[in-house]
Image: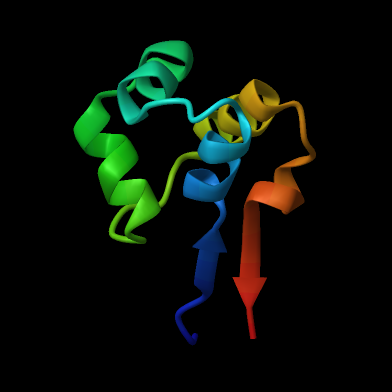
Length: 70
């Protein structure tokens, strides 16, 4: 089975949210700042639960934050 390429727009949404810091996002969703950095760089893929918490933080649907790239 081929690896799925998942991209995210977390950094973009943080800046749209009054330039929310990585630490502020981490605190709101219950992760570390280092995890936010890894997510934004595409080095870490969140659990489904965490992905939904991130999307809820920005008040957008999950698929607006995370997309499968074909």
